[in-house]
Image (spheres, rainbow, N blue to C red):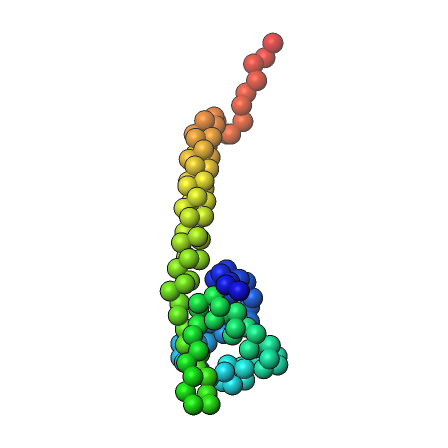
Length: 117
């Protein structure tokens, strides 16, 4: 099953694993030692990260080392950037609208006077 990078980062444990191996290459036992969950649970997280293409496993003898391949995170960055631009333009429009409203207010004590009949 091919998974996407959004599935990988959806889980906090997987995000922490990515953060750990982004800084240094670690074997599976070293990764598992940093969590209070079972080794099989960590292995499942590693499998998902591998299927997403965020890590690769390098086998050296009996050890399996996790190496980060963070290029796939560019998909997330691009997706977030689209929404950042969208909301930035909306907030800029709101700011201009509020400035226009502010400039239309009467200057005298901020209270409109009624015409007396």
